[in-house]
Figure 1 (cartoon, rainbow, N blue to C red):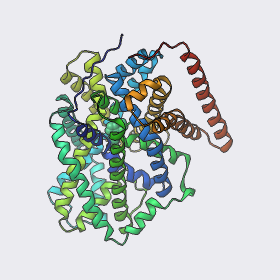
Figure 2: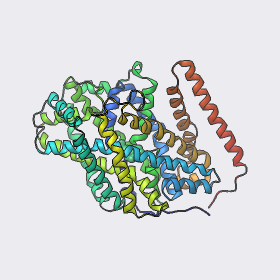
Figure 3: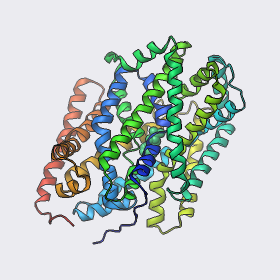
Figure 4: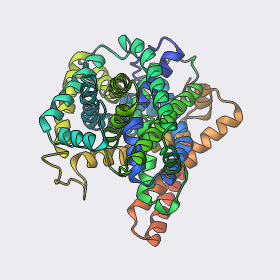
Length: 486
Ligand code: TRP
């Protein structure tokens, strides 16, 4: 067998694996991105679509991705190449892993810039600068920070350096212990903030905004953003979970782990949303304020709470840690690929890729000041363009191909051996990956390409016919397939 199985089981328990995967999933996506895109896209209906995408596409694709990593036993491009060889499929499948490596680096380049904002807020809060602050003052402070490219560059540099320091040592080590403490603490602090929110008059407005759907506000672009975010928030579609899966011993249950990851991730996002919109409506702020939403709202809440200095400082510290545990999973696919396939030491690989990410991040730093009016995609700054291309296109595309590979290329026997699901669940898993996940992604993609209903019908039709053709050819090809390996 030509397969090169390079990764060895590393996670010392099922619990540690879940913790690391939750650490990857829970991050800026939940606390910073979810609330601001929910605000920009009108709330309730958007949230409902997001939740549907998480349940119907996110969970099964998450399982599939972890499973492919464990079966392929290597970094994403190599794992896909191994599996394609095992199942006599096209070697082009390795491109899914390669695109994932690229997507991770692109995402990380803006992720560290935003995490830098949280770092700055941690310092400000610790120094007591947010005491008794009102929403206008927070807004001014935030605008001032974004207007200063040197400050943003400084924090971006700090975050890249911290990420590299952890990754250079390997995913295990100190990270396990840090995660153990940090995840429960983050959760605790969100509950304390929830307690504060419940006592506010605007709490009702927040709930209504997030959970009472108004479908007249829903556009196909909003559906694309909601779907893209389901991939982003669960860290799927680019191989991060594949790498983590490649370190997972055979005896642990993937389904159980995936359910915990999804529950924890969704809960944190909804909590953050409810808290932030309580501040928004209590202070007459704009729900659609954009990427600054978290940073323009929470200091106000902490400013009014008793013990707010302590909780605020701890909160921003935990956001930085949550961002770090996600950041390492964004670069780990690339690092393990360079390390394993180019035979470069882990430290060198990390340094090389880190330099690339740091450089690219400068584009995001400038998006908020010097390049604020420079557009890369129509109407979108460098940062907006990167975010759109990665979260809304690359991740869903990667996730869809992962679903197709698991459901049409991997044999029934191999899938059942890997997941050990009850027969009914196994069938639901397989048909979800065959139909719901890929067709869902195709429909949302096609609808976004079209500008009126008829174009939309045609685009969706063409996408479905192409998919049917693929499936038809695939099953003919399967007749020639030699029996499963193992
Ligand atoms: N899920 C993380 C968040 O919500 C971000 C993240 C980490 C990610 N690893 C990823 C997103 C891999 C996509 C793919 O903040």
